[in-house]
Image 1 (tube, protein in one colour):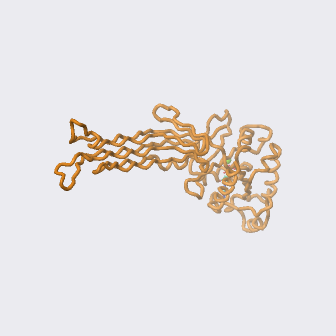
Image 2 (image 1 turned 45 degrees about the vertical axis):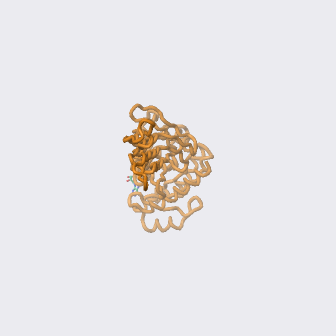
Image 3 (image 1 turned 120 degrees about the vertical axis):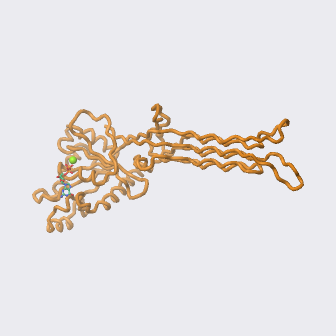
Length: 335
Ligand code: GDP
Ligand code: MG
């Protein structure tokens, strides 16, 4: 199963600066020769694979990326300043295609890998360049060339950074819709009624984001390999921080008990899942009676005070995102 994040952007390298026509003016030299300088070269557009990034979320907000143009030349044979190159950071694993013909232009698989995608335009020539024995006073110059430009499709195969673990009705879908800013595409999942639900979450830190995924039916029968559950467990084995969601509204099924059952289910599939970093929260705070809330607040689940959230009322949601982000970062640092 694959989750795919996509974005479409335009990149434009800088135009070269124009050459200029200019004449030397010196004291006692009545007619100076040509001294028009060349234009500076335009900035190029590069892409760089950045292990800090997880999704293409930023590219949904900004669609056009331009490198700086070169400056025009100046008198005294001064070449114009070159345009600054633009380096666009993308997550490791990003593929870049030309949107018009679908050709693969780059596949950034290694950390720090950098490619030149659109070359800046050459600067134009100033009139000094056209000086020759037969023409000592050329009155021409050329303009800077335009930079290369492309409409691009970016594509990234995502891993779930955070996998939600919880029984049906625990509030997994509600939480995802509350915290996610975008829905990635889900590619080639087998024919089934169980469609994974996932979203991209904006991290507290600018330009950072992570992926949260939930599979309906992860728990029921997942360890026996039914439905999508099994495949999804394989997927989270590779990547995720686990977020346990425990419904706090049912006094007959206390969260601490629910947690034990969930843990057992996961462990019976693969013990290693229990070694993953995890966070345990009680859901639906807005619908839990006061006394019960007070009791939960004093209780310990998984050796810690459980966080009590409400996706509906927005309670403790920023705190939850911050904690998840912390764990996701710690996990990535170990990769
Ligand atoms: P899932 O099966 O784990 O995906 O659970 P859902 O997100 O579909 O939620 C199950 C039910 O619980 C729905 O009726 C939701 O409206 C409700 N629910 C989810 N989160 C909250 C919450 O924070 N507060 C309240 N009062 N209800 C919630
Ligand atoms: Mg659901």
